[in-house]
Length: 363
Ligand code: SAH
Image 1 (cartoon, rainbow, N blue to C red):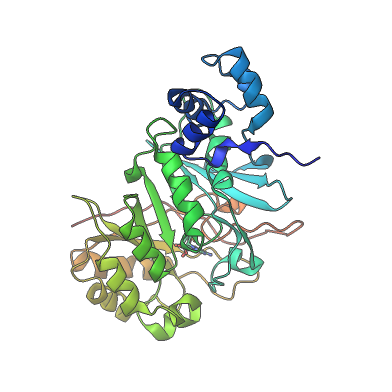
Image 2 (image 1 turned 90 degrees about the horizontal axis):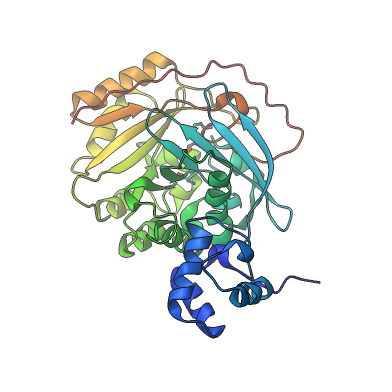
């Protein structure tokens, strides 16, 4: 028999309140239920001790609290952990936990596969399978947090896993509202970052929403000729349009946009690119994240040599821009940027060294 119970994992606080009222209970019971589900991560009504026995019994009949099923976990030598989750329909997604000194960042997926087919990204090779529901997006965070020790808490959330978040805007928006609700997991929007390959209408929608999350844009080229080749969505929304939308993105005090730039050998890593980038970003409050390309079988590019990445960074610094080189994490377990792809029986032997950390900022 199919399960007709309502899944609470993907419901907004207000929706849980309405549901509870429909069940003949006062609204504050709905807020309590939302807290049990989202803040205390309780999945069984019997364990929700502030609710009456009778109401617990009603809930057992009428609602459920879903989690993606943890199918496999892998730990990298650098502490990064990759989790494979199986969804109710058998599809699989990956999420990554990245610890560093003071933070524990969860990198989560928003789609099964991705339709954008960026040349340097393995997820693109999977093609698009489907959008995730809000319950599946929120469920990744809840399941990851469930697996941690009491004292460990996910501090930051980045939508940089599989998929293009802005192509799944309604479910992503809903998930972010749930995760940022102060009666729920209570993430500050300042600790949440949505990364896009450059879906302009989506950026505009995000700008018009009051979500207030950080925006990261995967720019990765300084001419349309090159960007058209490596990030095909550029043919629809070229660099000028993309940057116009970025300029219009509302930034609170001291907040900045992030531009991600994957460094590809002989493609987008020339000195001229660095100079053009300075010009393109003129007047935008931003930082630039240079990402060493993670090579993989099936991807045609090679990583830029370290010296070229550093020379590129020096040009940006020289122009007063903030530019960091993203440390590649979890590379040995294919958990690094652009390496999330669910495919059974792939040999993931790689022959590159992982990158050392580098960090330099100057405003
Ligand atoms: N669709 C979104 C989020 C997923 S990709 C986006 O494009 O931003 C997250 C980041 O990983 C992007 O900045 C992307 O450019 C980068 N990336 C993809 N493949 C990569 C690879 N093979 N090596 C390094 N970074 C990669």
